[in-house]
Image (cartoon, rainbow, N blue to C red; front, side, top):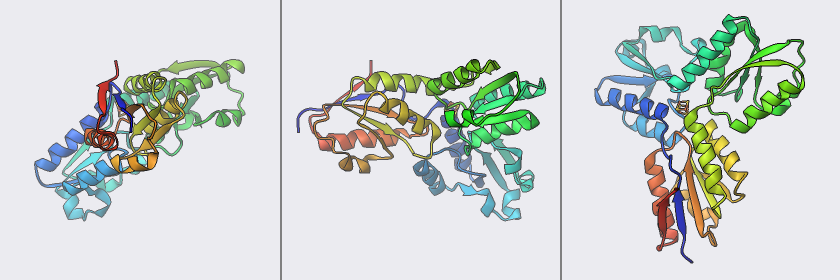
Length: 293
Ligand code: SF4
């Protein structure tokens, strides 16, 4: 196989919010005792399995006695009150690992709702972060927008709205939403709650993808920011593949790929990235690896 260059994105692996959640979980597990989570702490099945092998348990499966001795961890993307079973109050310790950037978005929703402004939440409808934002809007929630089709179903007489974004939405969709309201003469007060770390990865991925024959997006398909990264990357490089780990490399048909770009979602561990680079080296022993400029 001819020489292959692999160009790694400047920002790979965990974002700061996921890093903090994993560090807290590992520290709790190392300190001994029962440690349990109310749900997946992050959207990466491999990492949840690894934490499970270190002893992380599910709150649902604890007896009341075990719960009384347990440290309970709440996930990085926020938890609604309805998700907190009353019994969590019986835990020895509850640690809320919600990312501060997610909480900033929730605070923005609360401000709009508190001022009586109808709230539009732009986010994936089933995502826990979106539900967390919806809860803060309460009766002021006008709608949740996951796509342009959703906007077109909106029949309302409101003259103004407050718009808040799930942190992992894209800049492009934000623009579409704002334009939709502008065209209908509805005044928009906006809180820019997109995560800067996610935006940097999206921007970097598009720039890198323009120079590459093939793009590999590493991460889990259950991760919203990873799916979004795939979409923006594919807009610049048609040969874009989402992969979880190196085992998927042989199925990709990398023949003829002279420049391969590697980007990752924010809940992808560094070990998965290292494994993929090692796997590419097996495909092409003369591999040249470099960091994106
Ligand atoms: S992607 Fe951004 S908002 Fe989400 S957990 Fe990471 S740092 Fe926080």
